[in-house]
Each structure stands twice: as C-alpha cells, then as structure tokens.
Length: 602
Image 1 (cartoon, rainbow, N blue to C red):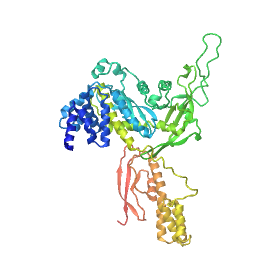
Image 2 (cartoon, one colour; image 1 turned 30 degrees about the horizontal axis):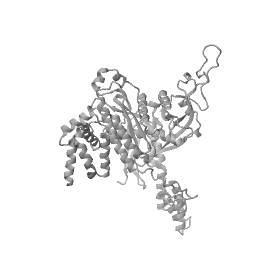
Image 3 (tube, one colour; image 1 turned 180 degrees about the vertical axis):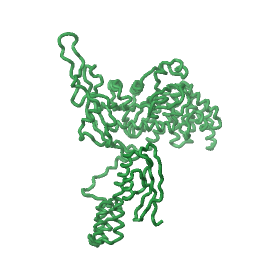
Image 4 (cartoon, one colour; image 1 turned 90 degrees about the vertical axis):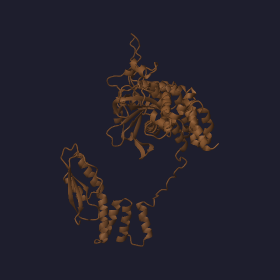
C-alpha cells in the first residue's frame, strides 16, 4: 500500500470515532518519526482514562490543536486548524467533549504526571512540591468562580478567576500535577449561580491554603515521590498550613511576611507558672512584658555584617542570579501562649540584596539543621520555575483561552493544557543532558599565572619582543596603547605622560593623552550629570552619546541644559547649532534645553 493512501486512511480514522482507535494504533508506527510515535502513544494513554471510546477522537483533536501553532486556542479555532473541511462538526464534537462529557480531569493529570516523572529522574529526584496559584482576568460576572479578588497577573485586585495548583519540580523539569479552581465564598453560597455553571454539590468554600493541603494529601495517597513543600507568603504565612504539613511528615520552605514574630536563637517562651495548690495546674507557656518575641524585621536588623553571605542559586539569561542571604534558628511565636510547649526550632532565611534599604523576603523552613545555606536558597528560589510554566501554558498552549463558563469545561480544558505541556516538558527533558557537563572540572591555576591578554603579560611580551630602551618614548607609547586597548586608561595615561616628558612636542603622544583623558573623564562626568539631573527630578530621555569635559561643566552650571550631541574625540572645535526646548512631564523646574552641536569648520 502506498504512503499517500496510508495518510488518507489515518485522516479518515481521526474523523471517524468508531474505528479511529484501531486504525490509529495499527498505522502510527509506520507513519511516524520517533517523537510523533511517542506523541501517539502518549495520547493513547490519556484516552484510557476517558471511559467511552467515542471520546478518543475528540481528545486527539483537542490535544493536537493545543500543540499546533496558533494565536487562539479556544475550541473553534482549534477545530479549524485540526479539520478545516469539517469545522462545524469537529467544533461540535470537541465542545461536547470538553463542556459536557463526564470524564475525570484528575485521571488525565495522573497520566501526564507519570509520563513526566520517568525522564525527570534523569536530572535528579523530585526536589520540591511547589504550591502556587495563577489568575485569569475576566470582564463578565457569569464565568464560574469569577469575582473581584487579587490577580497575580495584574498585580492588583480585579475581576478574575484564580486556580490553585501543586507542581513537582527539580532544577530541570517542572509540571503542575494538581489543578483546582478557587470558588469564592460569594459563589459557594449562591445556589442559583452554582446550578447555572454546574458546580458539584460536594464543592464547598475553602481558603486557598486548604485547597492546597487537600491536593498535597491526594498526592501523598497516590505515592508521588515526597519532597519539601515550597510556597510563597500567601500560603506560608498561615500557621495552620505549616502545622498541617509538619503533621503530615513533610518538610517545607515557605515565604512569610516581615510582621511574623519569632523567638531569637536560644530563646523561647517562659514555662507554665508554678502551681499554687488551688485550681487547675497551669499548662500553657507564657510571655511577660519584658520577654516577648520579635518581628522578623527586628531579627534581621540585629544580625551582624558577618552573618550575610552572597549566594548564587542559578544561571539566568543575563548571567548568574545572586543575592545576599542570612539564616538563623528561630521558634515561630504565633499564638504560642495557647500551647503547652513552645514550637520546635526552624530555619529563618532572609534575603537582603546589596543596595536595598531593608530585607526583601523571608522564609521559614523545617529542613534539617545540617542543610547548607546554598540548598536553602535554591529551594526557596525554585518557585520561580512555576511562574515560567504558567507563562508558557498561557502563551503557547492557551490555558487562559477557554471561553466557556462551566465548572466541568474549565477543569477539562486546564487538564488537557497541562497534559499537552507534560509531553513538551518530557521531550525537553529527554533532549537535555542529565547535568550540564558536570564531568568537566577546572583544575586550579598555577600560582602567579597571568593570561596572555592581560596588561601585565602584554608588558612582558613587549619587553621580550623589542630591543628598545624601556625609557624610550616609542616604547612608552606602544605600552600605553596596549593598556588603552585592554581597557585600562589609568595605566595608559601614565605611560603617555612619561613619553611626553621625554618628547614634549610629539603631536601623536598629545593625541593619545587626549583620548585617554576623555576615557577617564567620561564615566565620572556622566555619573555626575545623571545624579544632578535626578536630584532635580526632571524627566528627560536617556543620554546615550559621549560628553566631553566642557559640555559636562556647562550642563552642571545650567542644570536644565542637556547636551544631546556634544563633541567627539579628535580635538575638533564645536559650537551649538540648535536649541530644542521641551517641557517634560512632572518637571517642577521648567523646560529642558537640548543643545545640538556641530563643528565650527562646517
């Protein structure tokens, strides 16, 4: 049978729901590349969770539509891309499959999770269970769960839906494995709205942290490899959330707010009062007027300078990501006066970036005392991977493109988007090496080693290559040029001035002295001008051209003058040719004068 005929049979199999499964499985190996064969096998595994065989073809069409390129990943545009000759019928079958068919979205997520865990272990075990939520901005009031609430995408309170998820992650792979819509209390108590969108009767109002705990307990029951729980302050600041994780036998690294109180290292609440012989014996620990816990801000301010360490946690697109951190052992103090014993000690991790006025983030962790600081920081910062996952899920796979209003359709669409993302994440994990060239280790450099491109090596090579006296002006000139080309104008200017003392009338030496002087003057002049203008709070466009000393002096003398095109190197005389007066926004001191220059000879 020829290949075009086989392709037509496969197309007919996709369109025909009754016989699609048999023909798909018999022909996929003969028509597919290894990756396409893995995709077909993966979709077949997803189909085993759906129950009725009539749902298999819409599943393949929907997952294929999510993976195909396209600006919009709602049902109708995907139907047009998957089956352009039968858009209406394909749209109807896919819509019924998503909005009405009673299949279990959680079962699909379990298949996606198992598919990713296999290649994930090539990069190491599961490092964390990451709790997070994401928002979907909305305009209307009828979509399930929509309400005015905080939306992380917008960074403010607005009309939106919010989903709570738990992801498994390590340094190379991450995937949401639990996904549930947060139902606000106004929706949970409104029977009419619940009935209109099909909210199951068993779904009641729960805070986000309780939804996350339920998801974590389900993952534990299903045997997912355990790992520390990582969450931001929206979850970690709730003491009941942390206590429940500890009771479940899970460690955590969770963000907390700066107002959280804790006992300093080596300190704890007072023991219960001594019984006086009457009434019930006291059983609760206590505080006194002079013995109280401190806020995390106070604890951070009391740390000595030697407690802070610069830690790099990963390589970013713009270089190494690093910041200053400190850690100490503390006892959380939230309502501990109602307890019979103080809480156990935990790690308090504090981030205080260099140059910031105060610490920016705080974490509490129940990891062992022997945990290195770098490991604490790595886990605390691992939550950023989930933000990238959600960005890719929304931008590439249309997680936020669902146009329905029902509870079932919302979760079905989300589960299939995550399932499609799971296949892509698994393929990415297969292509990536288990460790980025970890077998290559750099040996220690010999003592006193200097690269050949360094100025010191250049000077040594010049000494070896020339027969000139080191005090000869040409030797000084050549050495200064080497320093100038290597980015060291200080040493270059020193060599040029030494050459000038020997040959004071040499025009070439004078030109290089001018060039080196301009290189030294420019950064300081630009910084002085920028600071002066910033102090006046004048809004001007960035200065991107070179400034010479005279232009800077004039600009500092008249603060509102900005020399947009000042003189360049070479000694040519310039004069102002045009002044452009602009009124920048929010300027309390009048217009900004941009001075444009031209050579006098022109």
